Amino acid sequence: MQANAAQTAIVQDILTAHLGMEGPLLPILHAVQAEFGHVPQDALPVIAKSLNLSRAEVHGVMSFYHDFREEPAGKHVVKLCRAEACQSMGADRVAAHAKAALGVDWHGTTADGAVTLEPIFCLGLCACAPAAMVDGKLVGRVDEARLDALLAGVRV
Image 1 (tube, helix red, strand yellow):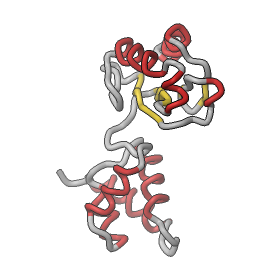
Image 2 (cartoon, rainbow, N blue to C red):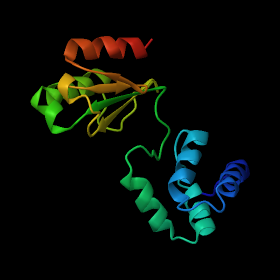
Image 3 (spheres, rainbow, N blue to C red):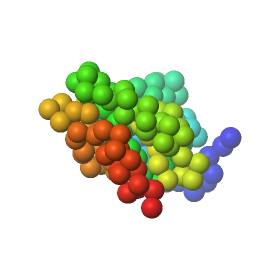
Image 4 (cartoon, one colour):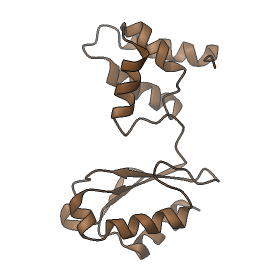
């Protein structure tokens, strides 16, 4: 599928804005995602050609960093810490509860488009484990009841 002209024009504007920058790939990917809510697959060859990289190289960088999305996220993003400190404090139980409550797996978005569930590896709240991030806001000591309250807050 070919990118539409408007999308290609926006990507070209982003590329132009980053000309001359040393190591521009990550800033370009961030800018594209900020514009579209994800990095459209059709943008990868345009970015690759502009930077004289292969599409595989661009895709490899994009897929390495977990914050880049191939599809738009839900209206709200819930990230649950998967690091060892949180696991030792019940994060696996909380994660299983979240998946069941939302009816999605990791990187999934609820059918109504309201919530995307993502794993994250260390939020730096080890002393307050298990930790979560809801729409960029850190939350510590998350158990099933607290998770339910957080989910109720974003599903309104």
